[in-house]
Length: 516
Image (cartoon, rainbow, N blue to C red; front, top):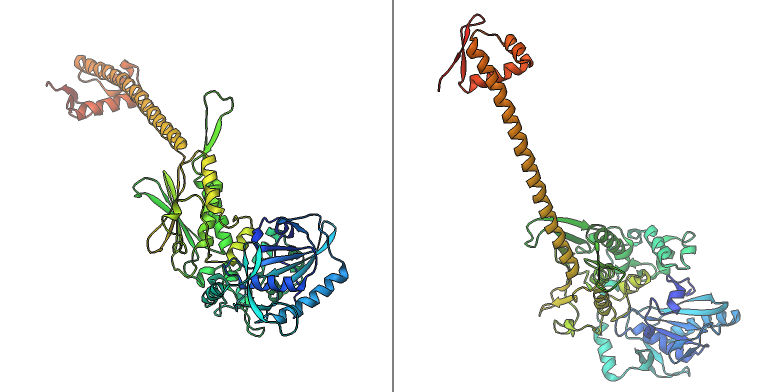
């Protein structure tokens, strides 16, 4: 089996612990096959469903800190190690083949071994490389590889009954359901060296390199995570794999608008954040007494919103048919996902600033999101949201679930200073509008007074002429009063309508003024 492949990740970020937590990295200054087979087995057992880990050979570690530039390996060492890796894979029970890639880093050759969480746990490795050595279960505890205790082995057997859903094979789908363009776009976005080779690879080979396929070589199918990230319509496989935003115009929720987001979950996250940034997020400037510089505040800080949205996509269950719901109210943003957190996290624990989760619902989704710089390391999500809300002088976020763990709720309250400024602006707008209305009414009244005065003058002049000569014609009226004939006709019509005058006879008749 060929286990030499380019890795679908950013090597520089990996070595600096920016996309993978330090507990999932093992640095080795040289090749020690016995230690390494134990660590491969421990990562493959993935007791916490964190997604396995990486072994980096050729980098010294002192006090848990990798030392750079690396010590490095010779080219002939790389070839020999990769051949030995195949032998070690056959010593593991059941067999487990890790993926390795030689990389030149800071002028030195190193070997990176990618050990994804295995599908056939528990895995066992020989205690020593002596023939017929007893095979035992190895686990990771923090950054250390250790023999599993009897209790730990029983626990591993319990959780091995079912893989995390995102890493399970989907036999209803095939390689044809994956979009190579989305795969290449992802590799480009994270800066993977695999991107440079992608154009010359078939979709099948690229999917294999990214460990997106599972099953026997003759019967490969995508893992669920592959469909969630690299299919443009994942909701056709997972009914709840879409999201909705509802914008409420009032506190009572009577007036609102809705928008639905579909596509790969990476696209949904990106589109949701762009939409909220362009539609909802706004800032104001406030003056602080005694300070030269003004302070800029946001109604909702973007980074806190980003972390909250990403957490919803990361920790939700894609077996659940309900979409992620984001409700934007005038005074808060509420993000609802299903179901709730995994025990032992409950409503009381959610009141604390920092939470330590033992188990994760999705082990592959988190790695993809971290590669895209969309997710923090384990246990850092809540503190990040708290810190950003504090930096914006916003109230603390609220996290809630119910006793049956049916849902998870994140509430981001609006910044109180921002809300005060908005209310003051609205009050000023109302006052300005009232002032404008008052001015308009004054102008209207003056105009009406002037118009009435003019109207009365013309009417009195017409009646005066008629009183002196009741046979006067409209043409003569226009001449005598020095106004247009059509104006005379208009006023005559008004006088007739009000019953002030009437015409007796036709063109040879006369006017009659009616006494009231």
